[in-house]
Image 1 (cartoon, each protein chain N blue to C red):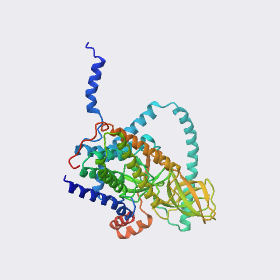
Image 2: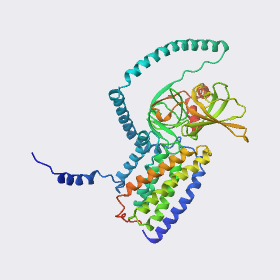
Image 3: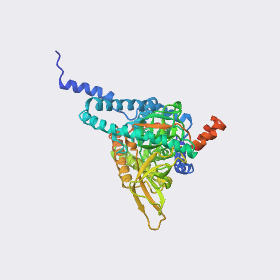
Image 4: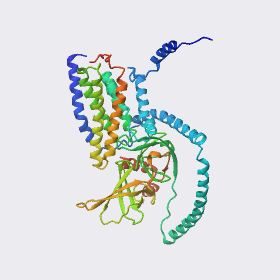
Length: 189
Length: 295
């Protein structure tokens, strides 16, 4: 019987790992759009049932921010539109809420991304925090207009704080691939 | 991309980012209700993944409950048999009372309550990322579901259909901050409009003089919204008085725990008033009326 050594297993695993590793962004539209749909399904179906709605987990914003930093502007706008529509046609949020906030985030990221060094973790961290805070602040403002101060309580603040921390954590996980190496400069920059 | 065109693009994007909130706030701030079919393509694309997850999750849950976790089943079975015997005798009494009620209504000349057409659906998704609370169910346009139809569960009111696809529908929950329902206090028969409050609660504003107690039950008034009269809605949890205000604020806990919902029933009957008009004006008029109502 042929013996397999630990180093051989490790070597094979390193080879396989390249194929099974999760890539948040492949650069191929035909792959990234289904990935966005999958994230939409995870975001609205799988995660609420796993967390029993005790934790609000926002998968869409960190993934979108990662894409917006990396992608060319026409694709970035396409992804932000699709993500906004996925969320809006799945929830009772006012029509245009996520389209508007994601559009603003896209524009801000496009205008600032060249001035930041994406080799370091700090710009990624700040961008995730800023984008998530922007989404939460806009939602809160819209809620305050449509429902007054009724829905705001400590539970709401706690839920939004958890959401912010989890989203930033997910974002930092997604950006691990680019920290240290930086991002490839696209043609339109 | 040249420096000039890049600068121009930057200006256009900056301007659009500044204008976007103004455009958004100039709209009605209502959820997508009857979106263009093209928009629903995205949701139709998501539906198989949702359905697959639901099948997987419910299969695992069933296997766990029916084949693995049976330690408490014998004791539960014994207690349920006792409970069932008690309920059967109550059903006999109840049947008797229903018949008596019908006879008395006929004697008094009240119109008979129409039979509810119910359609069962499974819950396959739940969204409560912010305070916009909705669930997705497995019935849609193909099953005769329309926007605005009431949705109930065994414990009471769940919400109403807000958007439909071919095989699914999104239901705005009772606890959504944009949900309003005409209700009656069961004990004192006082009417009020219930509003969603989020965090699994609703709120009701009543005049200070209205008598109300913690634990009082609220039922649907049956006046607007298509819900039949007498459906349980929730119970009074907290009453807050403000000295300078003429109203008392009542916090309601809905009977239905939407976080644990697995199956719901859609009431296919339209608003009784609409039905009367539709009988004369035809089904096309009804479709148009529902469309306008949902806008």
